[in-house]
Amino acid sequence: MSKADTPPAVETNQQGQTLGRKGMQTRQNLMSAARRLLDVYSPVELTAVSIAKEAGTSSASFYMYFEDIRDILYALAIDAGADMATLQEIVDQPWVPETVLEHSTRLVERFTAIWQAHRQVLRFRNLEADRGDPRFEALRMNTYVPFIDKVARQIVATCPPDKQRPTLSQAFALASVLHAAMERLATTDPAVVARYVGAPKVNEALAHTIQLVFSAGAPGVVAPAAAAKTAAKAAKAAKTAKAGTKISKA
Image (cartoon, rainbow, N blue to C red; front, side, top):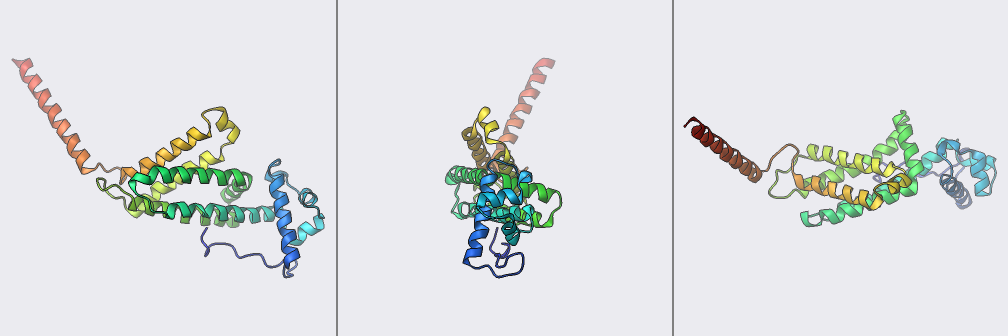
């Protein structure tokens, strides 16, 4: 999420009163309480009473700072989006063909760690965005688009010299597919992943896939050297087949 797209900082409570240090602290305490409860309960099971009790305050205090449960989940989703924005720091580093796998591995590990820290909130954000809530959809896109754009530009910049460089639109499509794969795997219950292949192998495979995309060049285009090699093999095969036909007739 870029600074320009970040929702404005909350400066007042639900009654329009300016938040002072104590008010900001109470609001943060309620958000921290909600995070702790999300380790045990799903977002749809949260209540103002349970959050307020966990925070050591009253439900009336909860409604001083948040309109409802969706509102506090929206606030938590903003924090999750800010963490996701830190992925751009990895993408912004110099990538060259020799370091693509190293950077890809770090990117996957960081992406997975953020999802582990905000799993319930991010899943709720995506669910509500899919259901058509414009606020949650804006949060999702403000996180997705800048990240995908940066990855796309790295795909173009890091293209090996022996491959045809993809256009930016082609690279954006490739980056979108990579992001979708990363997110889908990150949403999977860690217990399920551990029960089968395990997170390390999944992350390794995903980093390898990113490396392949970075090294493949433009989609659907065969590099000149590879095309020439393929043509030579085809010509040789045709020549052998023709010779075989002549022998057969003889």
